[in-house]
Image (cartoon, rainbow, N blue to C red):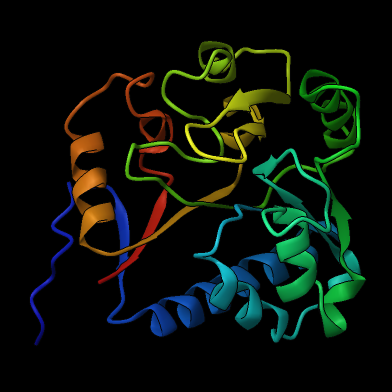
Length: 237
């Protein structure tokens, strides 16, 4: 029997898989079950996902799941302020790997708009996200600096974005890497998800998670805002 490497505090739900393939498969299966249950209970299901390169295998697995995709609404936790055709676009990533085949019937609510400024684009996204039903499943990732979505340490709007009583659903953020201009859903909407999930892989991310769990300064490591008993963590080496 393998010895667990996670060794996380009691109260956190953890799924430890042995490979990225196993993680993508298990995560897709469990997300599909949660979405199916939401459709049965409410007639619709809402999924909010994060972008980047890590979720590609998960997206491909999820697209193969037997779901009534016409009753699923999908949106993004954050977006790079680049056109959908750009290689760094999270919406473009979803269209290539998730919104394919039967899954293309899902309704997608994107965050990007070709506005005059990232501030205006965030206001446009705020209006678009107003149509988002309650979030059934949220998939978050995490950077080595402890950011999640595009809630970056030291970003000018971080304190407002982390407010639980904030009025904004989406805010412009500044990333330390290009493309620097980002759009992110705020904590008050992300924290409302019925099933929040953090998906990470590798020892470096596990070390970052342990560091985050050892402190409580949200501005230093924004992932801390979501590290509570409702969160399910998926990890593989």
